[in-house]
Amino acid sequence: MDVERTIEFILQQQAKAEARQAQAEARQAQAEAKAERQMAAIRKLIQTGMRMIVKNEELVKATQAELRELTAAQRVTETKLQGLIEALRRGRNGSHRKN
Image 1 (spheres, one colour):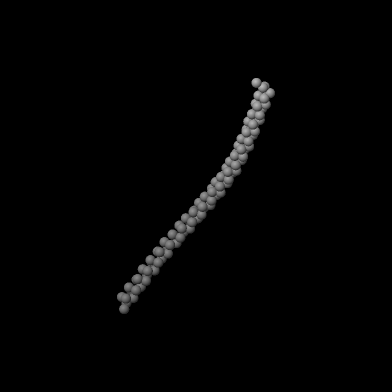
Image 2 (spheres, helix red, strand yellow):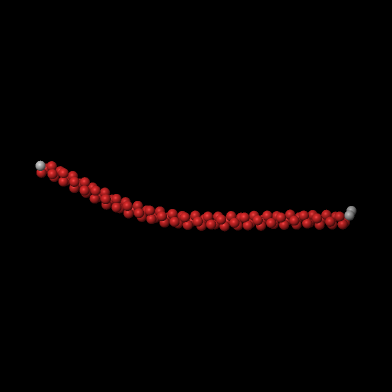
């Protein structure tokens, strides 16, 4: 048995294992960097989405307030219109009686 060849073989195997380990560590670092970029992008999307939700809620509240005002104005208009219709009816009925 050749001790030098055995030692050489062991050293080569060790070098190959270290190279594979270095490659694995580099791939791991790349994967972690990619994951961090993706997480940052997701955080940004969530923040943007939350801002949009808040803005949408503000718009909904403003729209609801405008609809309440419009509904109130419509009720007043309807009341006045009904009063006008009644006044016109009374006026016609009264003019028929006078003739």
